[in-house]
Length: 129
Image (cartoon, rainbow, N blue to C red):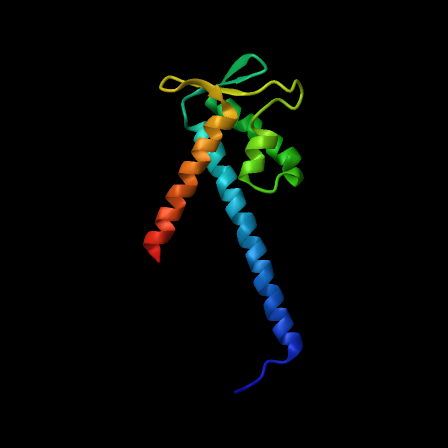
């Protein structure tokens, strides 16, 4: 059996770790993109600082906040908590108003959407294996 020289083994292990980190970052981006798309396509109204905004405007606003504060967000849960739950200007909570559910805190609405996404993703991965 041929031995792999230590420097090559280290390089392979490092690449493996980078790949894991890259995959984790891609998964994070996919979850946040999913949440932004869920907002955009919801047909709901989003209440920010007492003013109602359509779903497209809400998604654009949250995407802009995310671009500016991305370094403070490690995952989709922190995106909800730190970016999409309240105004960074006034501190007032955001609300989502849908015809079916009525008005709820955006943190609640987004957390439910993220939970559904993760369950669906896990189901697909389980069926693929």
